[in-house]
Length: 376
Ligand SMILES: *Cc1c(COP(=O)(O)O)cnc(C)c1O
Image (cartoon, rainbow, N blue to C red):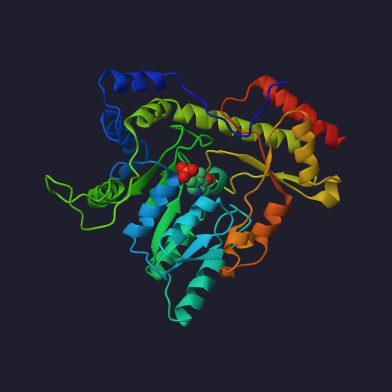
């Protein structure tokens, strides 16, 4: 039986044409028409007046966002705890200290109350945090009105990790365009993929050019190689950007498919007391539903999320626990944490289900059949 994956690459058809073009014109380099074209496509798609720099990964984009926000040795950066480790790792690349913030139940993202508590406590100790990293988990927009309000009130730079949320919207505005910086990822399992890649969304062309300067080894303007700053090798290749241009042509269609998957799970679990499908809290939120997830109340259904995971695995269907919160990770055990146990409980009882835009009717039938074995 073919394995059903959580989220696998889904090509639209035009990708190879752009890659072919790169070969034919010998633009096999970390710059060229596909990189410029992909940046233009993204700028047009997310919002006129934003500036996008395509990079080698979402992680490198986040690293540059921190550098451009002036984060350095010893600084504190407030970061959503419930996320993928790539949201937090770049903080430590800068020698800064992550302070982790709990989630709230509506969006599973950064809790504004815990965020403000952390800021007040840091200020009291005389070390005002340098930046906030908010994540739009599984494509669900965070409570951006409240988070922006807090970042403005305390004048702290806001970085949006929209790696999972390309195409998602809060009150009609695309995720990644609210903060001082936004980051996107095009890794293999994301809503669109370039096989590997990412982008930094900036508020000005000047910031974008500075990001590209740092991403290409920080070369001064001279005929020889001269450097006055430490640089990085973070630029996107013109080959992978070609895949990105092709993927942009099918992005909205693929979001539609992912949203249909979410509807499928909502119908499947509609009458099951004890299983809640993760969905938008109200009309302010539009999720790309990158991954569909459920929370299981074991006391009501009589099985745990691990029971369900193993049951699916037996039928060659991949599922995965929600992100293990960063404040529970061995590598971050020394870090401060604000909040209660929302993220912890979500991790304990939550499961991500197959959500690819390329799931077939037959795949959904197999998933339903497998889940029904436990529901009986
Ligand atoms: C995938 C992901 C990243 C990192 O992106 P890469 O392109 O894999 O480096 C960062 N944050 C979140 C929330 C992600 O899911």
